[in-house]
Structures are given as structure tokens and as C-alpha cells.
Amino acid sequence: MGHSIASQCNPVEQLLQRVRQAASQLAHSDLKQRNDALKAAAKALRQYEPEILAANAQDIAEAKVSDAFKDRLTLNPSRLEAMAKGLEAIAELPDPLGKIQAKWVRPNGLKIRRVTVPLGIIGMIYESRPNVGADAAGICLKSGNGLILRGGSESYRSAQAIHKAMQQGIQTSGLNPDVIAMAPSSDREHVTHILHAVGQIDVLIPRGGKSLIEFVQRESRIPVLAHAAGLCHTYIHKAADFDMARKIIANAKMRRTGICGATETLLIDQEIASQLLPKIVKDLSALGCRFLGNDQARQIIPDMKIATEKDFATEWLDAVLSVAVMKDIHQALEHIAHYGSGHTEAIITEDESIAMQFLNSTESAVVIWNASTQFCDGGEFGFGAEIGISTGRLHARGPVGIDQLVSYHYEIFGKGQVRPL
Image (cartoon, rainbow, N blue to C red; front, side):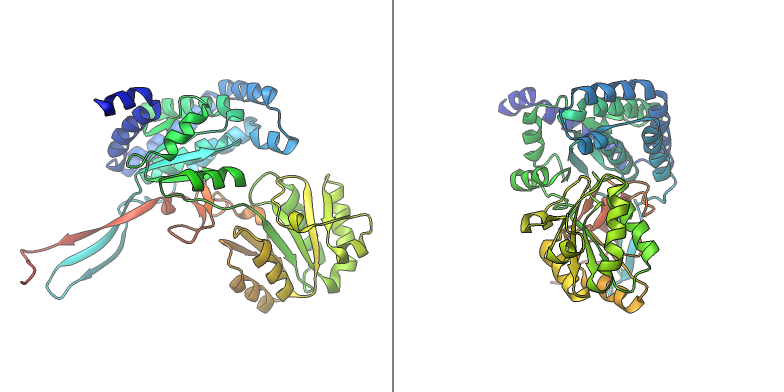
């Protein structure tokens, strides 16, 4: 009786019961069914574009947030089309389920194999970017996992419109649309219910700022797959090509300042800083960037504001760049080890041995040589999209796509074997 009353009082629990039932069907669906559902969901996003953009315009009109935050919140036809294409790209990927990872035969004749299976039910708590819900839904559909979404209050109407469209598409494919659920309102109480849904949700993935992720990790009673923050560094070594360095850092910082793969700190070798740093500052200033620097950087650019310890530990998510002139690669690696969040780091150099030293000495989830940190993205990795980026050391690291949202079980084939006494 008590459980029945709790279920009536807790709409999230009722929702999760439907998700689990639908996920059971999804886990046993064939690849064609799941791919058809993804393509139908993409078609529905295009079909419902006017409704989705209208809902998004309402969210933006009421949002009292910074310009950088508003950019993350904003949808337009090209971003919506990118979401639809992302779903279609996921449909083109190989099936992550039923893969035989290993197989062997024991001396007693037992045949054993390790085979991929879905994780189960994913709980996704995210903030402003409405496309996160579509990406997560696509990845979960392909990998056979159920999903419950809880987006931020600033983007709730947008998330709702996207969710409704995708459910319509999934339904036309013959799969149960309840496999992708959304919290019934932006009420914070629903977050608590999701965080405490032990036995109903198998893995939680928070996507947002540091405070959200820390809150989820602190309060959740369910395993959490998360990154601490996106405090990414780009180090320009003395053997860098100057034109390449200028092009990369402009993209790494300013392409989209509000994403977790944006470079937040520029480290530059002291041997080239006086020649190259003024050019980089000029390039990025023209794009609206502001700068904070260490003493050596300010000797080159006197009007640059002083960077404090707190500044070097800050994920700006805005048009602000921390700058530090470094003595050599060893000091750069020490700086990254001290301030970094384990997300993404890049080095720009023409010296292969130095590049390999950097890649092998950096403990971040993603390390890059001669390219923008903004490539730390599931779509750019060929994953179709991503449900998040993990900086932890258990299960998955880096962008989390369909192959990271599976577990495995063991299948054993016998011919009457029994264990001896």
C-alpha cells in the first residue's frame, strides 16, 4: 500500500516504470528498428521546426542570463538541422549491441564469450543547451538504453518541444516512445527523485556547469558518469608554426566560447612569446576576447589585466582567456597538472618528439596535437553525437557515444559439464 501511495505522489517514479518497460522492448529490438526510429525522429525534428523554434524564442525572451549562456540556449534552423543530421549519423553507425568482445574455450570444454548489452536506464540532468536532449536520445536509442531527461528551467519549453517531436517520430517507427521520457516539469523536486531512483535508473549523466555536476555527484545514490569541468589548455611550443598557432587558438577560444571544449588558458613558450603573443591578442581582441595574464605575459602586453590563482582555475565559458608565458614544456605540463580539470589539452608544435612527450605526459581524457580543443566532441570523433564527456577513470573517458553506453555479459555454452566436488 505504501509503495502505491508513493508512486501516486511521485510522477518521476511512475514515468520510470514506463521507461523500463519500453527499454526492455528496445533492448531486444533489431538494428533496423532502432535505425528506423532514429531516422523517423530526425524527420520529426524537421517537421516540427516551427513549433520548436517558437518554444525556443519564448525561452530566450524570458531568460535572464549572460550573452554566452544565451548562445548556448539559442536554436536556429541550422542548429536544428545539425541535430537532425546527428541522429541520421548515429543511424549509420555499426550496432554497438551483441558484439562479441572476446571468446575462449576452457579445458573442460566450456565455451565462453563476452557480449555487449545495454547499460539499462540512463538519467540525464542538463542545463541550457536544448540539443543535448536530442543527442542523448539518439545515442540511447541506438545503444538500446532507456532515457529520462531533466533539462534546465531556462530551456524547458525548447526541450519539451524537441522531446515531443522525437517521441512522435519514434512512435511512427513502431517502437514504444516511452523509451525517451522527460521530467513532467522544471520543478527541482524532480531532480531529487531522479538522483534517488536507485533500482530504476542505472547510470546518471549530468551535463552542465561545475556546480551542477558537483551537486549531482554529491547528492546522487546512483553511479555518475561525469566530467569535473572543461578547463582546457592550449600550449604553443617554441617550435610552433606561427600562422597555424594563430588560426588554431582563435578557433579554440572563440568559435563557441560557451562549450566545454573551448580553450580557457593559453600557455606560450617564452622564446616566442614576444613575437607571437601580440599577434594572438590582436586576433582575438578583434573577435571580442578579453585577457588576463601572468607577470611575463603583462611585460609583453602591459595593458593586460593580472591573472590570479582563481583566474587560472576558472572555466570561463565566455570570451575571456587566461594567458601564461611558460619557461618550457615541463613548466607547461606542471601548470596543466595543477589547474587542469582532466578534460582536453592541446599542443601546437612542429617538433614530433615534444608533441609525443606532451601527449604521453598529460593525464586528460583527450590530448590533441596541432588542432583546436573544440574537436573534443562526439560528432567530430565519428560517434554521431555524444551524451557527455567523461573525465573519470572508470568505464568511459572522453566523449561518450554509443560504444560507451554499453556494458557486457558473459555467455557460457556447455555440454553437460558440472563442477567437481
